[in-house]
Image: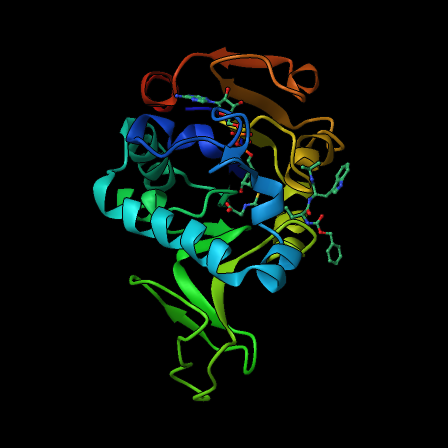
Length: 230
Ligand code: BV8
């Protein structure tokens, strides 16, 4: 592996595509005829909570039918063998990285397998359905429970930790993301401010941010990541 010391990895929906988790733009960003940006938003939740609950209940249930792929396993192996600072930031809300063994992991857009109470702020591991009638186990209120997911217009989680890691990264891997959603789409530019940082993009096609990478690996993550990690 490389001589670099501090690695930051960003993954997107392309990481889980070969596990059977549909990407966002692969279905041209539509779900049951709705634009995903319209469903994954606080306004949509206020307007039609049951539509939004259904969107996430279906995706949460689907997690029981998918498995990590060789790309997830390669990143977990890289973390075990890495001697410097290691941080894996995922935009994905599935649990495939942790099921593959990744530990130094930030879910910047939240997690399908967690729920949050808007009344008291408590966050719970969550595997079953959520609805407007779900009572909060902490404060007992009904109507405040929501998916612990970052919607469009909401601040992603642990941004300070991510920014600090990017500032000192000398290796940045950008994997399976179309580079269309900010602030994640701006991470390559931030890493590149350290001129000594090596940036590598892994994707099956060109993206909105490909021009920011001197190194690009074209191919599916399940093939290319195990080769890169060897
Ligand atoms: C924020 C959780 C501010 C939900 C998600 C106008 C211009 C610029 C920015 C904006 C703008 N208007 C609004 C914004 C900001 C907005 C944004 O960026 N909008 C976009 C649409 C323009 N961003 C936000 O709102 C963010 N918050 O800015 O907050 C703020 C500041 C202060 C205080 C308060 C607030 C929040 C964004 C988070 C939204 N939530 N996820 C859910 O999942 O249901 S985003 C969601 O979409 C995903 O998490 C993911 O991040 C994104 C999809 O992107 P990708 O992961 O890249 O997936 P995609 O399908 O697009 O691409 C897949 C790629 O994989 C492809 O390139 C494909 O080629 C590749 N691939 C496929 N198969 C493989 C593969 N690669 C390798 N191997 C394979 N086998």
